[in-house]
Length: 85
Image 1: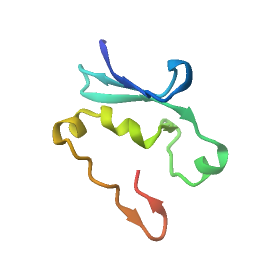
Image 2: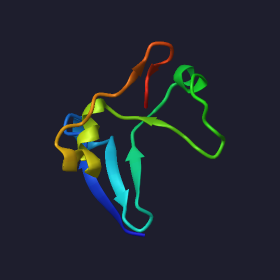
Image 3: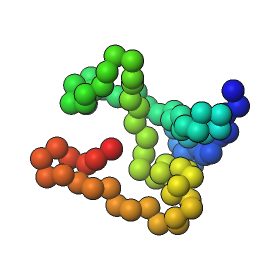
Image 4: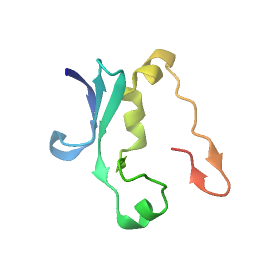
C-alpha cells in the first residue's frame, strides 16, 4: 500500500504532526493529528472500531477537493451542537 503525503502543518513546531496522507489504492485520506481529550471524546458518538484526532483548520488546504475548488466553503454551524466536522 503506497501512501502519498499531501502536506504537513507548516506551523507545527519541529515539523511534526499533523499530516494529511492519501491512500491511492483505497481512495481514502489518512489524518495524523493530536489525540483528543476525554472531555471532547465524550461529546462524540464514536464506535469502538473508530477513533478521532484533531487538526488545525488550516490543514483543510491539503485535501485534494479543496485544492481543486480554490475556495473552501465555510463549515456549517448548527446552533444546538457546534460546528459540523
